[in-house]
Length: 133
Image 1 (cartoon, rainbow, N blue to C red):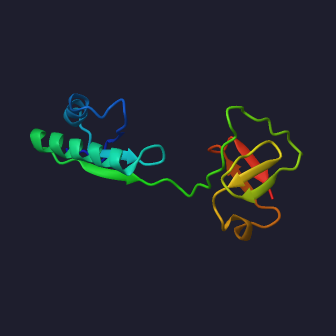
Image 2: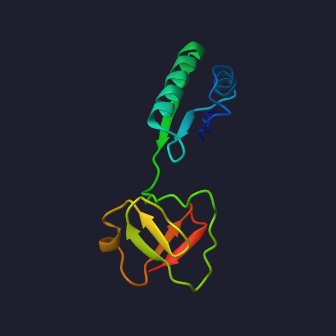
């Protein structure tokens, strides 16, 4: 009976070497997922080339899935210190990339102020902080 499911494996620093890729292919990996949220295009291209080499050597087709990150608004540096945002306090968002602190957060996205309206929620720090406009 043919297998009706696919095995997808995320390839990153811990699994990018060719020995590990070969083991994954032999174990039945059908699709190699390359996440770009925390990697560069160059890193993904190197991993894809390694996947293609191993796939050819093993004579087994392995698909490549490139997982693109969602939109992210970059903030200016907070320096070397972490900040505490206290629930209920006001924080100003400004366009810029010089510096941020607990009262002013500078963002690089020039369209942010025209894209949000009162009541909108902004997620920061991969969802660890939520700001309400």
